[in-house]
Length: 138
Image (cartoon, one colour):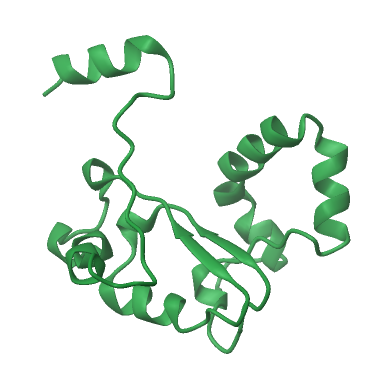
């Protein structure tokens, strides 16, 4: 892009929440760093998916609600043999200028596929106050 610095430096602000969650999972920053250095875990921006094939991989696409339908098609097109893709998103958190362009609205087209499973989380997994306070803000 146009910002100075390496790709890693440009991406770092967006990776903070991802790395924070991964450190919680692995219980240590050192383990996560080693997994990244050994290329066991790779964090890739959507803009760097083109031309790639993710084989024998688990691809977690976070903030799926802010992808467009064409970005969804491009991401799915990168799925290689022996891989799965997990799309995580929340319809209430769409940040696109035109909410209607969110790929999350494409899910209905996929619900009858033998290759797709749609899982909707119904319970709050954060602080108990979150659900209560957000309901008050409606």
